[in-house]
Amino acid sequence: MLNIILCGAPGSGKGTQSDFIVEKYGLSHLSTGDVLRAEIKAGTPLGKEIDAIISKGQLVSDDKMIALIEHFLDSLSKDCKGVIFDGFPRTVAQAEALTAMLAKRNMSATLIDLMVEEQSLIERMINRGKTSGRADDNLETIKQRLQVFHRQTAPVADFYLEQRNYFAINGNKSMQQVFAQIDNILQILKH
Ligand code: AP5
Ligand code: MG
Image 1 (cartoon, rainbow, N blue to C red):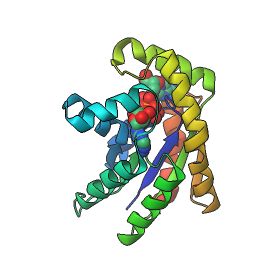
Image 2: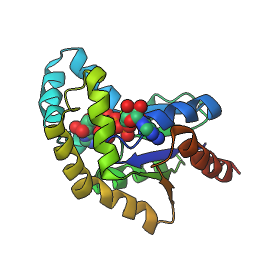
Image 3: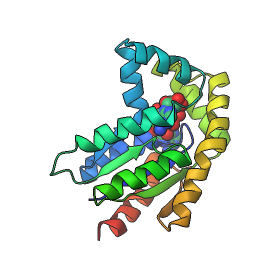
């Protein structure tokens, strides 16, 4: 199985690149942000709780996220070619839990880090906010999301780097140029 973690700041292109990867490699895509937004849309009590957290640019608790991933892994079909984890793990505690959950299933994952300059991230999200309807695509929340990323998620990259399970990508290029870099890595990982 070809399992990858697409890691990167808010607006770095995780969702965009996941679509390209799914199209070429047929992997299963899990965007934790999309799952949480679906829960909000469903209007459940849990959804209301999550809405308050996302709107402030904070992270949902590790316990809830790890339970969500465990459930997802249990639901994978036998012929699954691999998984793209988009937006998970976002803390070192989540990374440790993922490593253990995958090991239990004889699986592992490699992290691909999308590096994008901060000013471009802000411009992309402000621009997307004009049509996305996302409660977190406004300047105040974007700044908060970036702070949370630097404090809580950036150490996840070090965790995979230390395990020599890490590739960095220049995400400041066009979507196609970014995908070309990811494609090269996936060709290496496939063999
Ligand atoms: P999530 O949905 O994961 O949001 P995010 O990480 O903030 O990232 P985005 O989805 O905004 O950006 P992206 O990297 O996918 O970029 P995209 O391809 O869309 O999480 C939302 C919230 O949910 C979190 O803040 C947290 O509260 C909660 N959450 C989620 N996972 C969690 C977890 N594990 N633990 C705890 N809480 C969790 O691109 C952005 C824009 O740029 C688009 O308009 C796109 O068209 C454009 N674009 C993309 N690539 C390029 C390019 N190369 N050049 C120019 N424009 C580009
Ligand atoms: Mg996304």
